[in-house]
Length: 273
Image 1 (tube, rainbow, N blue to C red):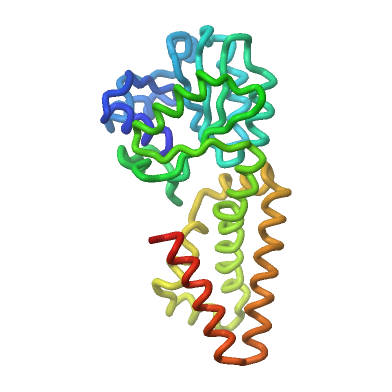
Image 2: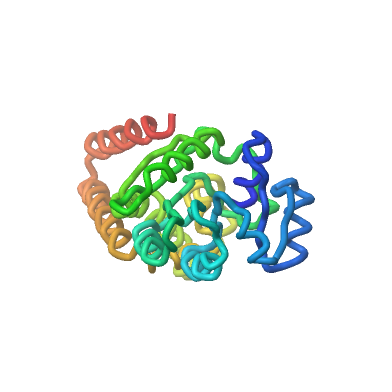
């Protein structure tokens, strides 16, 4: 979905020729038909040799293995980037294996869906959305600037971040919410005799709160295992907030509950205007 959306966005704005690399012939034909790429192939060497910029749009645990497969074919000056939602793990590993004259810059478009597959791709997916690019002591300045300009032309809001800082932020606003949404649905599964009634009466409140629980389980697993420390820290912060609300409910003071909800509403409304 992300790879297809990148291709569509680049083609829509006529920024570059887009070549797709995938292992399955049917996906090559589908990508061309959906106008996500100009051409697609499963020939790694043939595709990689001519590339100026390579986007690795794979699940987190497959990004480094894929980079290891392609780096023997890249030409000097090539920029490699990724779209994984964990950055410290990926960037640290990728920087160790880059050939001389080939540059890696970590990337994370904050514009996903709970659905996957190229059929879900959208040319306008990145419009107005944050797109993180990472910078470390090893990051090439020209390569970073090239990607920054390209991403901005896609309509995204570019943020330059340290990989570790990125992971702590994303753990709280993206990875932990997956754990919360999954736990909320799981609590219904443990509701005993009331489970069926809960399922039958569920409406927009539960649907909107747990949307991301419908995401690919493997993506969630990648988040939790590659960003473990930051996710656990974020979950502990959430537990403290939940304990505060629990205490207010237990005490039963309407004014204190209302004030807490008003404070939270104000913050939430300032985030999603």
